[in-house]
Length: 281
Image (cartoon, rainbow, N blue to C red; front, top):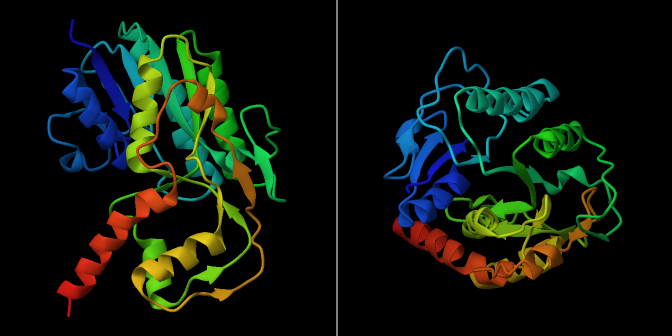
């Protein structure tokens, strides 16, 4: 039977995930502010997640991915989209008869407050200093308390095609090489992880979604400067965010990364950037 899948907040990660699901002959609906930006083959559900009104779900869904993001960086906007909208959407789907096999929520490593270069994993203390981490923990509890099988995935810094902010900073000489630890995951691996956990026979309720290699900012920007052929960035002091994320649980589940490190994922992004620079001359 065809499986019906809803991706609520179908941006870069959601579109990459949708491509995998469509290749399996799933029927996929996506919710996003600009439905014209949904991947080909994704059915739009034209609804505001923060205000469902009396909107009826377009299908009974077997799987739900909640990959929405806030449109403003303030506490009210975060709570509205990550907690309140999530609760209301799941209840609306239940009321409409969806017997969801799994609900997957993309959280963030912002739930960790460690700042001394410590290693963190799913068992580590979550004492975030910022409102964003605290609200994401509230959202995780919504998924944990759901009658469906819920899976929270704490993603680290997402990068991928079109996300050239760091490349541009290195290119322009604005980047600073610091000893602070950073963590990344390519957008294609974000989608791959979610798809893997959707199909995994006996998943855990929580995974840390990050690649194999935590790296200091200095490691990344100095490597990138070399690839770009520009001067090495100046060195600076450590930043507030400073932890190393461990993906051992995800690895043990059988997931294999397409881009295990930033050195695997950034070259094509850099090449595309350089072609753009050459074309603009």
